[in-house]
Length: 204
Length: 204
DNA sequence: ACGTTAATGACACCGGGTGTCAAATGGAAG
DNA sequence: CTTCCATTTGACACCCGGTGTCATTAACGT
Image 1 (cartoon, rainbow over the protein chains, first blue to last red):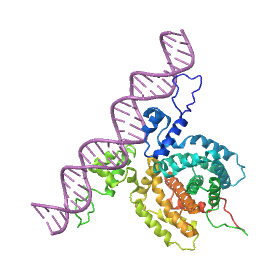
Image 2 (image 1 turned 30 degrees about the vertical axis):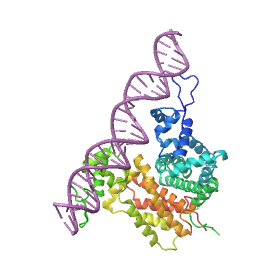
Image 3 (image 1 turned 135 degrees about the vertical axis):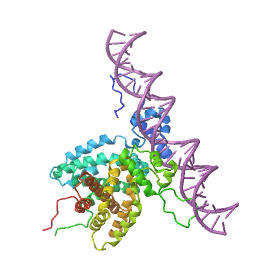
Image 4 (image 1 turned 90 degrees about the vertical axis):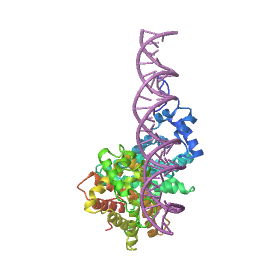
């Protein structure tokens, strides 16, 4: 999983392509033929590499869609750490998730296509579960720390799972409504989660 | 071999086995060799049928683990309908989920092994996502009806997603702690969800 | 006996994924 | 320039899950 940017003073043959390059090629094919109809051979041939080499850049065909997801988790972890310690857990959570999903306007369309694949192609829906696990762990870690519990305890895990679910619902809604703004939808959904999806309980 | 329940007056060759029979055979192998190491050929051979026939009883190797899951969803739908209409959504949800997961003591061990596979084997973790979609739809349908919205709206979908996540966290906790009671864990988790995972907000 | 209906299993095929290994490539040391 | 070493590459063979096809088998009715 090493970055393919050939370090100047490194011995050995240089990589013939890179993850990002391969990703671009693959996405073009996915757009044209659909994810399922695109074989790894197709991608490899279009990229001018061997089938075997493809699997050295990505663990699986599914993984192509995820790009540099793992790296971004580190950023999310930082954002959590940057929240004021006194802030309620669910509020920090909302702020970070909303912020985490703010993409540059120029990238919006690309982000949309990515999520479209992940959320609508069954094979990717299934596989994404494995990727979400890392996301959840970041959330659980934060929730545990804030509530003074262990990461594996029921509450932090439940928070993480519920947060993921809420985010997914927001993503799907956003995909279904092209006019909506992702950040707004996420904000709404997480506000509802923090309220326990009940009536606005006012203490008067 | 196992006599398959064949309708008496039906023409045509009778099935040589049944889903439940096949499931038993498969689970024995899964227990012995693990899910991944057990091939469909192994199962077919152990059941005395052809490989092709296996795929007429189950759409995939993954599906073996799920048994008659779909049928049980209808039961859950009924339980939702049976809740008092004035009851808060999240309370009905908690009651139904807890009730839905009450299994006979004799079946507990079997249920445990089933969930162990689903939640711990990566291939099944991934595949289960597809099955969960139906579960979520049942919840979303109920939530929509109770809140006077469409099933596809953000809130019902978020509730369904969050509920699923909460249930999964509870399942995992239960698996990790053999002394715990599944119903109790679920009840706790859903109570927290209904509270928005916040401090006990008291109106004094 | 005959046609009908349904399940079976053999066979071939596709596609994702892996293990192995010789060959290609490039830097560094002689 | 040559030699050595590190690294990537791609060909090849293989496994396994899943599907389409089709002849065969086993039950039913007449």
